[in-house]
Length: 154
Image: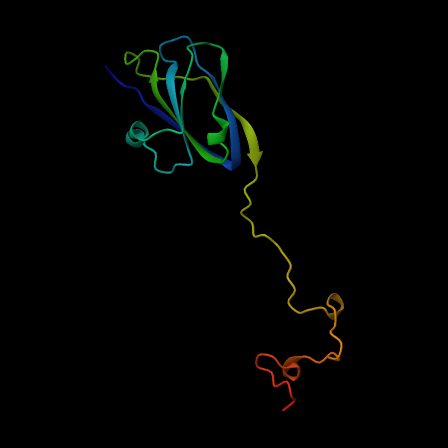
């Protein structure tokens, strides 16, 4: 019995909330049977995909129709890359190739904010923004006392 493996990696230019995988296969033995989905992995190869727990496993139908296969949305809220591991096909080892004719994704696109966040802070106090204390007469620095200040004008 031969095993056929196919891994497809999709890296997105944004963060995705994935809702479903849209796929069109066929009624032949080369149509995929089991699809394992892995999100945000950089280390996936055939050995790793066979051994580690996928984010979700999908069973695909053997049909010429376009299938929209929903995923568990709670598991796919922060997708930056998606690995699809077509573990087997309907030939169950008798077919060397696994074929699909269309692959799409349905979800929500969210921009990745990789640019610096611009904010403004007050480098020097603007006296008109602050209430003045009576008796200080606008004096600042060491004449006011406190930490490091003389307070008595010495």
